[in-house]
Amino acid sequence: MFRYSWHAPVLGVLAVVLGALVLSAEPALAHKLNVYAGAAGGTITGYAYFPGGGRAKGVKVEVLGPDGKVLGQTETGQDGAFAFEAGFKCDHTFVVDSGDGHRATYTVEADALPDGLPLLDSGAGGQLAGPQGVPAHLAAPSLLPPPVGEGRGEGGSATEPDAAARHTSSSPCEAGFAEQGEGGQALGRQIRGLREQIEGYQEQVRFRDVLGGIGYIFGVAGIAFYFLGRRQQRRQ
Amino acid sequence: MHISEGILPPVLLAAGAAASAGGIALGLRAMDHERVPRVALLTSALFVASLIHVKVGPSSAHLVLNGLAGLILGWAIFPAFLVALLLQAVLFGFGGLTTLGVNTFDLALPGVVCYYLFGCAIRGSLPAVAGRQAHSSQLSAVSSQRLLTTHYSLLTAHCSLTAALYALGFAAGAAAILVSSLITAGVLLAAGKEWKTLGELLVLAHVPIMVIEGLLTGSVVVFLARVRPEVLGAGAMKEAAHV
Image (cartoon, rainbow over all chains, first blue to last red; front, side, top):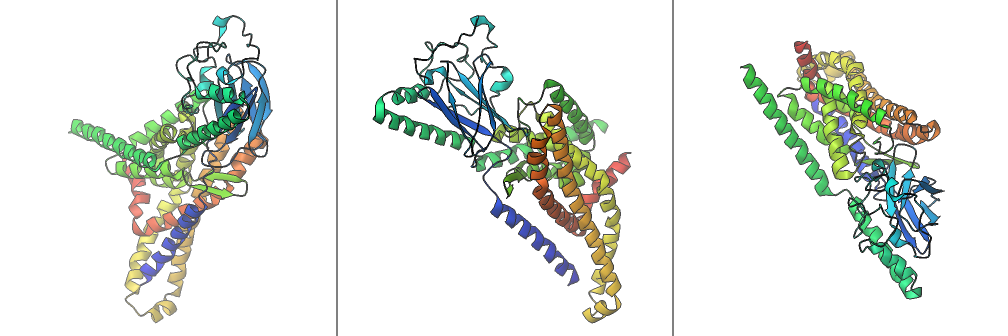
């Protein structure tokens, strides 16, 4: 029949397009940028990446102190990695901006840096920007994957450049190990690998998130029906 | 095309939110009982589409489906994108909550543009499709030999109508992505970004997406015109009745 022979090619094209999409579906996400950093001794190394795979090459990295002051600047290499020599023992916030509307931040706490570094002279302590130490828009919670086991975050952990009153965190362990010779350095590397893996898992889009989102959408549709029904009732 | 938090100045964020609020109000007014499930279905599609990535060359971008959603939803694409982007921000961390207004505007407005620019022509040709459909099912009762010889002209007319519908759908799907990337680039330009990076990473990177969404939208439009023309046209009639 003409009618059905006509449907077949359209469905075929659709199937081919969708099939090609699924096959070419790359895990590299262009709509989200992330940055990870960790300290080994006085050097902070890290990388900018797209969650799920792929590194951000040649992207500008700005390093901010706890009060939002620019400490320095660097750029990611071909593998998306960057290194920054810490001059002070203070929180370092790494801001990565790819220039096309994507941006990510990550804070390496002062604890992770060796004790030998000078404290950052931040002038009057009361001048610091806020409880976060960095301007609020830099510390957008949805952009910062909550670093596992670290005291970073809501509780004003970044206000004091002085590390004395800090919670235990995994970063100092890394730094500590780094100072303890060969075996310690190997352990530090392993811990770093684990932390990277945890961050990776946290950034993955999971099937249950997708299903949950669709569930929310239909829930919202239900609410819309409720209001439409009320509007109709009132009219009658 | 999800602009992250902390990039745009508050003025642009507020402007985007205000523009989106206007679109959302218009979209909600156009909604009725019959449209709600359709809006919900397309919202789900928009929400999931951003997970489908296409990697061509060094660039990688994701589907948006705003052309298709615009053709089917009209102004209701605004509330659809608001919900889809809110959930993407909360569940996936794409975009952000403060940039929700700007992102909704960037993606939904081109859909509305397509609704008026290409949707009118598509809706106009729906009766012709329905007429041909009735005619060709009559003809299929006749021997195929006669159909090919005496009604060859009818067949070619039918094919050209299909081709026209496909072309309109393709144009809508591709144009929506192009306009979206240009609006996003414009917003970022206003925020002080460099045009060179924007052109490369935003506009050029979306060329493969334009082609794919064009093919997809064209296929869906042709399919809907044959099988469920009211999905493409019913909204327009409703609105006409309201006005």
